Image 1 (cartoon, one colour):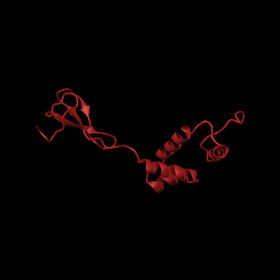
Image 2 (cartoon, one colour):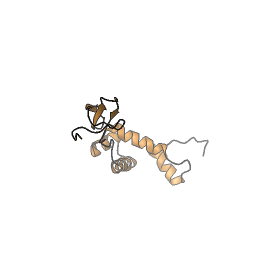
Image 3 (cartoon, one colour):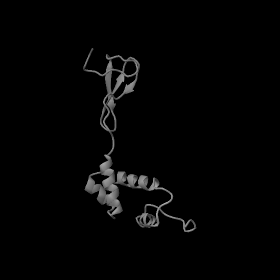
Image 4 (tube, one colour):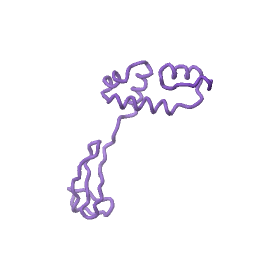
Length: 116
């Protein structure tokens, strides 16, 4: 068996496996010349750790701007905005008044005055 090239996950051939670019995370992609299957034998994880996301949300809730958070944590400011929006979108509908007030003041949610 040739250890230099990976094995195709579709046809299980180990010969005629050619490099075929890379993933956005930087992992090497291959294409099988036998069956044309494109695959990544050792994918790298893409994105940031949950710890970084939690730090970003904590800083945002403490009033730090998105761009400042991006500088502090060395992440893209749009990623921080996406995390904040995802967090806001996953908040439960019924919140205690103290949490609701904080969420409104921090701009995470808006409430319709007719709802309360």
